Image 1 (tube, rainbow, N blue to C red):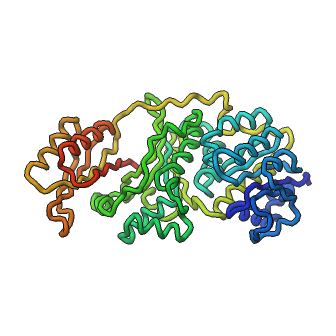
Image 2: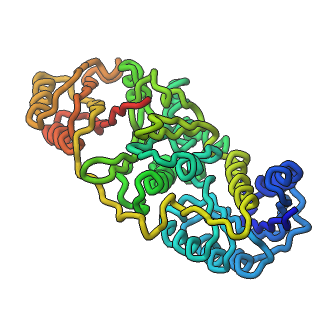
Image 3: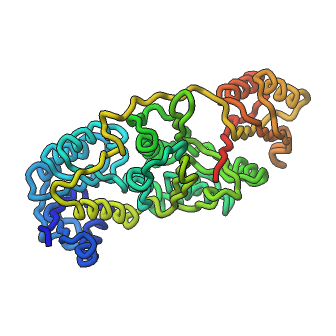
Length: 437
């Protein structure tokens, strides 16, 4: 049997402790699968005295994760610290430069520095594995990087943040407000004390930027993503979507167009009968559209200690199965020198149309003014519905518009015009309608 694979874990929070526990509890099974033992020989975290529910007494303790990456007797450095700078970045870079394989769950680090780190990994002939960085326990990275040879990907989209999906699911199922669902998500540990990173779309954008690079062979461009969160989604939107046969999901969408690559994160209406509309709670889902395979949907646990630990351990096991002299595949599916500069797509028509909700003053001429603004911007309407906003607001009406194919610019210009006309009594709501399998 080959020598044991020595692992160093930096970061012993929920995920790090779960990884150590799985490596201990599944040791015999992993040895059978990999042909060698996997042992945790070094660890690093802030508090050496904290009880993490797993015996790490046999591992050497390091206060400094970067020093552990440089000097510990390890073959694999597992980074579970988090953050795109500081110790996370310096320790991963140090491990790669020292010729050690790296496994990370850090999407923020990869979104900002992934290509640079991949260049080091390829130069040093080591692996940089990151399955846990996108969609938790769903093996989407391995699927795109290894299992889809010969396929040309045209679009990848999905539900990439469990916190947002949980909130939207509860809002629809129980008629609760956004704020009430957010508080409950925080109580259950699905949302952070400061939930901004999740609910405003940043987390989804980081994950989408990684999938975009894998799908289209471009350099990561997390800063070139149109991004909108879910904090402005109301019960009025949820109810209107249901009446129209749709469900609201926060989607990350990347697709190839004639003018470049389009990346966007925003609340989206998807047909209730579509598969992705059936993804509820903290579950994640990723759909990949290709020329050969057609559409593939991967769904499963997107967060949590066990789901993330499963992906991390899978990456470690892949390294354990490799042998000296084995030629490792490129980090992002292509050698970094072949990754193309990201070219942002030009504004184009959105085939799915738009949902527009307007709360307007109940007075003569408002309906005609709205229709004129739409016509002036060449927006064709599929439907327009007006009803009272509620018994307590008799002076208001809610107007629901559903457009045919048009551009984002046209919709925004029309809505800005309606706002300037003084007809609105509340902030307008604009949500894309997405075709989805």
